[in-house]
Image 1 (spheres, chains in turn red, purple):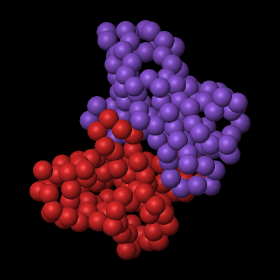
Image 2: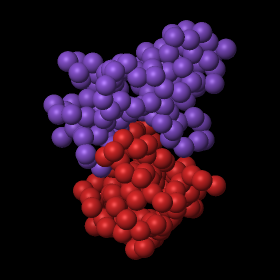
Image 3: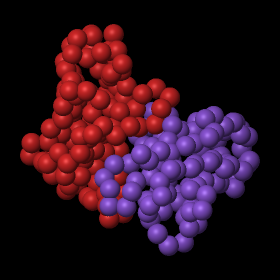
Image 4: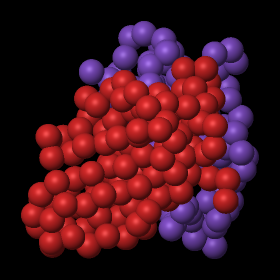
Length: 115
Length: 113
């Protein structure tokens, strides 16, 4: 399809396990974002890429969270040694250029449950 | 730091009722404002956005929002809701030329036939 694609859609991880979440942005979109949405809350910013450069990672909650976009297209969010508080929906979004008024498109999210 | 407040956490309406969802933000500079909607089981979709110009913005599906700078508000309205408007609604803001969106906690709207 033409939208932002995320996988896996659902992931159950045991506490302490490492997880990797993948995002395929819309083709040609330069900017890519990761957000975390806890139950009953709005999405909270994690990190932002422009092409392969990670320009803002101020929202990553700890050093267990790591994101990359090595070729400026697909991105992976990795969470090491998962904890129960990491349970959330992880949203990926992309846009041509957020500062120019272009719409930011969101994927359906990866639902992570840590047990 | 910027923040966005959505005062109505859960709104229940009958079809044909009018809707107004409140949104206030805290930031003194120039901002871009958005309303996103999330239908059950679906991804966030843009309803409407304000960047500049006419403070009354019209979006999809009959929604509109009014930017009142003096009140730091961007309330969402619809004159007559439908059952299909049942969804979660998120207000969001970003600073001019900034990257990230700051979201409110969302308002869950339930419309009964």
